[in-house]
Image (cartoon, rainbow, N blue to C red; front, side, top):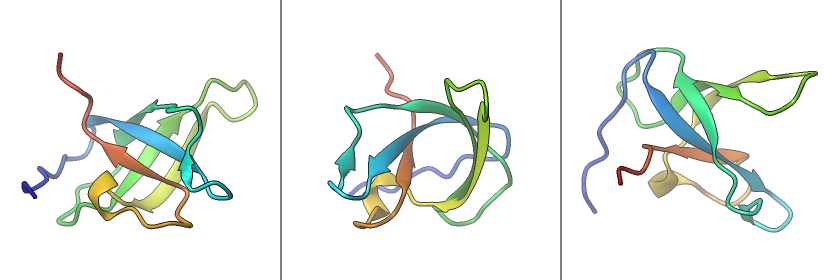
Length: 83
């Protein structure tokens, strides 16, 4: 496995919410997120942008990278795909 580059505060990443009942991504949804604080670990604090008028920004702590995601966790982050 390659080493994951840890993003710094303010960097943009993707957040993949999980359906914990099915243990899969909800239709492969990915949401834009901003890293909220500097970290030395690949679990990050994120502000996630949702397409929702009632709670357009949600804060999540200790979100794992996709390589460390375990069943039962709400979601994971990953770097945006470069095309």
